[in-house]
View: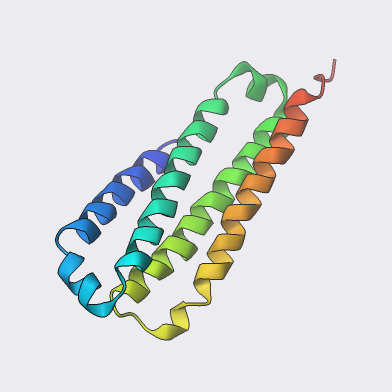
Length: 132
C-alpha cells in the first residue's frame, strides 16, 4: 500500500493539469470546470493524507501500537475508495459521463469522512499506553 499514495498524487497532478489546460475549453463550455476542480482538489488532498499515513505506519508508534496501525490502514483504504468513488465519479460526469454516476460522489464523500474518523480512532489508540 506504500506505492498507492505516490500513484494517486501523480494522477491527481496530471488530472488537475488536464482540467486547467487541455480540457479547460470543454469544461468551461459544459459548465463543469468547477466539478473537475473539486474532484482534483479532493483527489490531491487525500493523496497527501495517504502519504502522511504511510509515513506514520513506519514509525515506532505503529510498530509498538498495532491498534494504531490498524486504524491508519483502515483510513488509507477508506481514502483510496473515497478518491476513486468521489473524485472518479466527478471527473467522469464533468466529461459528460452518464448522470447515474452522480450517486457515487456522496458514497465517496462518506468514504473520505470515514477515513478521517479512522484517523481520529488511530490518534486515540496512539495515546493509549502500549500493552506490556
